Length: 282
Image (cartoon, rainbow, N blue to C red):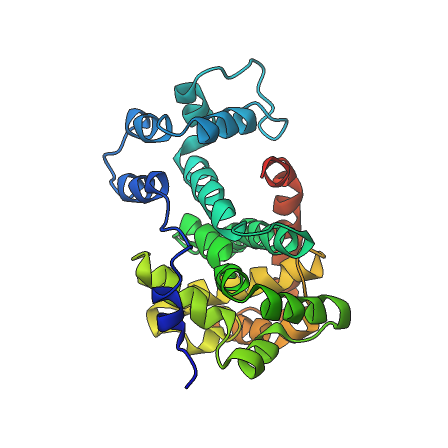
């Protein structure tokens, strides 16, 4: 009898929970009265994360005239929104890099990060109000691949090599090989983490956004567009042609014509170019 994605997650003892710093930051950032000091107290408990944030704050991306030396300065320089993204990205990287980190794992992580940046840019372009939720949705959309890679290193590694070398459809191959796909597994994991329902829907339906619950259609559509664009930009494993049906669904959901989509794509590509420093830091 085939195992369900929920059973897979329940039995996957070596995958860590969402790190405590990220959990605390998600809770605090949802509080409209939260201050820079509240963020500083949480982030300062993680020395590596503090160092990473200072490095990003001092990068060419922000063009500072003077060096940023303290975490408080860095928070004020980057802003709450970017800080939240950096913390979640740092946590997600540890999850994507479970087990042996080779070319496949690095490509999956790069794809997740570029998709996150593109999701945030698309959200701004279509005036979606929860921009950081779009970033996190993009970041987490393929976390199920990491889970399957940890649980089935040989079989899933072989599947990814087929996708990489032959341009196969990862979703179809996963369903044929395991009876479930990375989107189902990813949804089960983010449900376990109690992430927002919209994020759960975006992770589950980034290949078929039209099936998301009505109140979460826009977020799923944004992540679908970003997922496609990331592959078009050669970030990740797979043939972007397999994602064209998802993009058509997303265009319908967001009421975007071909010309509007192309205009948005140009602004998103510009955002990815601007955020290359952040990509390099991770």
